[in-house]
Amino acid sequence: MKDLFLRAERYSTATAMACACAMLALAASLGMFQILMRFVFEEPAEWTEVLIRFSLIWMVFLAIPMAFRHGAMVSVDVLYRWSPPPLRRLLDWVVCLAALSLCAVLIWWGFDYARRGSVQSMAGLESMSMFWAYLALPVGGLLSLPGIIGNLLQPRREELETAQ
Image (tube, rainbow, N blue to C red; front, side, top):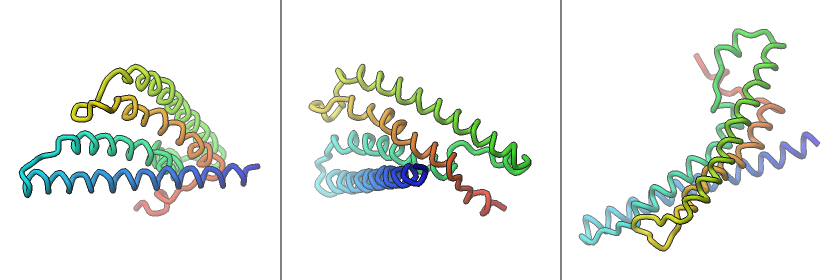
């Protein structure tokens, strides 16, 4: 059961990270397009600025699951190093529960915020609702849950080994 969960977690985290990378590539491409349109053709495309902001928001919230999986979001390295092994496991549980609580807040209030923002339209893209931008919060929170639990089941501490 644990192996099945970790396999599913690896797949969901990798998919989220691939989408985050795609959002970064989209933001960079739109930025280059905006520079070309503004300074070469002297015809700025104002919709690109909105989409760059939109894609960067999604990029951040889609990359959070990978950060949680690697234990890089809630860093308690000093406490972990100074603690005896039985206390380390307790510390892992405390960090996990705190992160799950944070994600629960992100999911609950993020979806509420997205729902309420659905009547707003994006400046520069009036046909698109702000719901799609705000939806990044609950989606990022939902995709983070398997990574948080995966880090509890199979901790990764690469930053501890590389720290000097």
